[in-house]
Image (cartoon, rainbow, N blue to C red; front, side):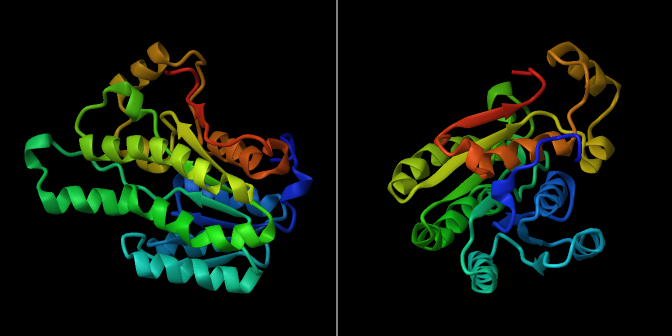
Length: 251
């Protein structure tokens, strides 16, 4: 990270990240900790989270939480807020992009996809609003996806949730703006996390990247984390209600 930007305004800031144990989330945790922020994160993968914790400076906090349980999510946010005084930055990252066919989706599966991919973003934002307002402002960063613009197949529930996040970001930015709380959405392209490489990167996928991205290099989680750093820092103090696409030019 030393060759990239350092943001003095992030030092000492309190940052809460959902889904922080692996993939983009783990990169977010590491990058914010590297900026001197006080980082708290939640996940359901305790093994990965504990391995990540071993690499972080003192002061980072992990707690097990399934974001489908709204009460548990609210409790985890409250505990971290009590420890740090208030939350300056919330990053709603937790998600699951399991593939599914339209004919196989029932009401229970649909509700579960929303419970993972959409509902936590709202309730986490709701929970941190008062503390951010008392502190004079804050930054909420939601993670969207370029699947919304791609007419992607076999993940309609995931696409619906991510599309709603894009819209909800703008609505929350309008409501929270008077309290100097900024709300933005980072829209990653096809990021080469371990999960993506293992499950879906094949020869056809390599060809799609070469054909559709303007830039020939593959995206990695650090590319997304660096955009989030900017949106959390004071440098982006008048950026709100926006979608920031990091996709190598795919869309």
